[in-house]
Length: 571
Image (tube, rainbow, N blue to C red; front, side, top):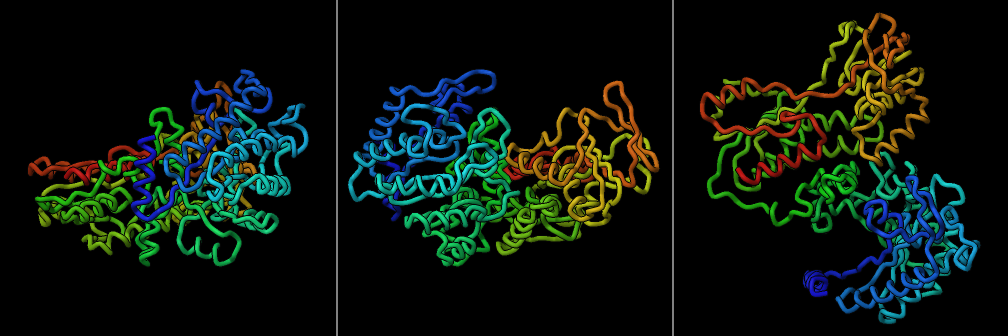
């Protein structure tokens, strides 16, 4: 309680209002914490183990617990509370016939399935002041599941909740059930870049119209203009932005001050938030675009007392992050980029289907660096002569990565191209296309070719036992769904042993086969670019140098940017 009071006081002191969300996780908590108790309506098989449905005693305990939690929220100084009835949490599971198979008063009809939530609402309402707003988060519908809630069901339920004392609807989307399966409905809870911006706003608008309640729109809202357009249209009364504020905690202030161009926008990559939170080795969120998340004090920008001239070799996102942070600290960064564009592989990634926002983010970051006054020199390779001329105090090597060329006979044929060449538009494979490599890049190249050349017959060949293993869960769900709809064939546990003029030779276990092809695309990954000349000059001249990002090891963007952020704060 002392910590919560300190928290709400800080918010009030800054002129804000504080709302706390009250939730009972059910399977949402149980799947991430093996020790947690599943509170679900009916017996359910989860990974081979039967989880029993909640007893009447447990239901009463939960209803009472929501009431006492609401009472504590008032004592702690919160201005309103929100009740969570979405995303496969316990109340959502009771509400949806997809999960609720009970035959007592808490199952069967919509009115019975709603009983659990309505009793919780009444319990909360009894423990908060009469004039305190009560919000409720709901899904607009269930997706990819039999017997799921329709938007009509939700409208009926929201009208019941209105009578019970709910004032505001926070309309989201996404379900975690069926539990223990790779269900596609999860992608709508923390929607990746593959899901259109504002995809759920029209649903919220219909719910607002048919309930007459104050309604909040959510779901891939990541710019002030987009938010303002939704409000001006009258489709919702408010908008909620979550990941946009993780990517840039000053989002609202920058929008208020008319500095939208300086906002670091969420691109829904999910690398730092959802993927890291669910990864066993991290268990906390970060953000690809904002590595300071959760470590704000540690990552505070501290002005240097001894400004240095720092040469940054490479203008990808890692190089840009380093240069911008160094400039903010008072150093003199000089960024040299061998090509004529800033953004590195993020620019390239932004050419894949549904990923245009990544290209926009790369371009925006370059513009922000220029606006800060970073000395940027394009079409400039870092050589010994350049290092001699600039004579920096230290060097950051952020030269990135390049495609791996496999040791497969036939890769020198003219019909064999790299994934980079395809995405850059240098060549468009047509006819029978075989893509060697089923990771992120291989799958995105397959989608790109399918989108640009409708006559293509595409097969992706992967040595591992599955494709897309380097994709985060929710992005993978979206990509795999699209591969299926496009009819793109995947061949796993399969090795390409030779490329011929009109075919590829494949091995799967002890079996071999030939696959006819007109084009072969190599997409087996990237390797760090060599920077031997920089290394030799720095070591010979006793000049400190640091290697970050893909130049150190080809990985995800979240790693590269994080390394740049950390290094540039200690130089």
